[in-house]
Length: 185
Length: 185
DNA sequence: ACCTGAACACCGTTCAAGT
DNA sequence: ACCTGAACACCGTTCAAGT
Image (cartoon, rainbow over all chains, first blue to last red; front, side, top):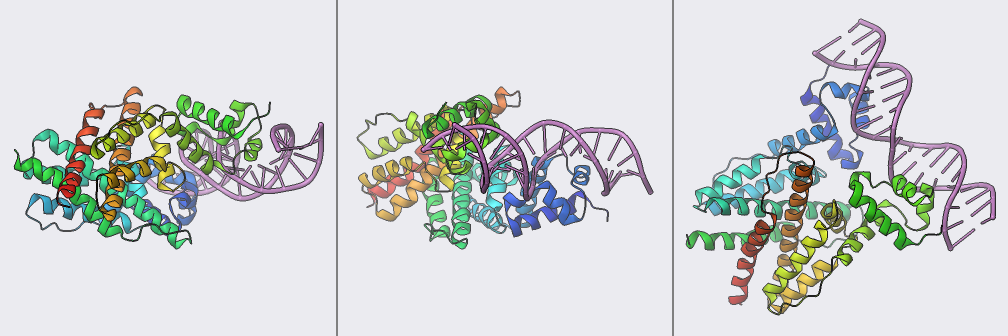
């Protein structure tokens, strides 16, 4: 029974998806692997960096080929991929957003969006502002959507009927603002 | 030494602001009040609802008179008030955003934005989409800004030089999209 | 009504010792 | 190199008992 870091991360995702983030404890993960809690610290320095690795792996597993040519279609494509990747696992959005907030992992979507906006010919400062605004929209929307979904399936009230439609429409609002500034360049 | 719920909430904000969210534990709060942890449960049903009350009180303390007449200026005014309210206490953004995400408290900004967008003459479904999008932008931006500030003052690297400017510019991007849809109504 | 004291069922992390 | 066993310093919450 010898494990590698990747085994620990994979088992962490399995625990996350089955029991949720609040149950993803170092002790729980250790017992799921048939090992003492202290053994985990040979593969991972602490819980925070384990969660960052989980966030990166969730995004890696959700990666798709990107086909769009036009910069604004490319933005929509990257955002849809990001949303789907986070929704694929229970509490996936929360984990990815938290890792991103603390600057640990989850960097790929930001650089993909940056290069899309740069290809669109936006000035550098607007690339920065736009990238962050788009990420805030996708992260905020997806966390809210996933929380509502999970609350609904736990028997609570459902206030969020159309996740995908709302997502696309709010993204279009922001893209309108960005397109107007490309035209005026 | 008899306390009311409002004393507990006020002391919770004091602990939050001085030591941060990770130190705001029921046990810490109790000892700060000179009381046993179990005593808190006479004033508050659990920690989650205490944090919701903290979020509401943070927003109440940051409330300002709103003067703007034009709907889009009103949106900017409400968003600036919301951002300032959250920035006024350590980890304030995190607390307010978490309460909002779980639908516990922090409802006032959403309804203020809703009525501003409705006054602008936007169709009902766009009022919904727009309100959520604006909130995601403000919340996402402010959490990131506050995290960066606190990381910087703790000695880490600073990547977020212009919080307020970025905030206003990304909000303007979204408002462009909304204004275009008012014009086309 | 409000609080104490004690308990229950947990956490993340460290570290000497084993193989 | 990888893991065990035991410990340290904590958590949120419940509940009988006191005033």
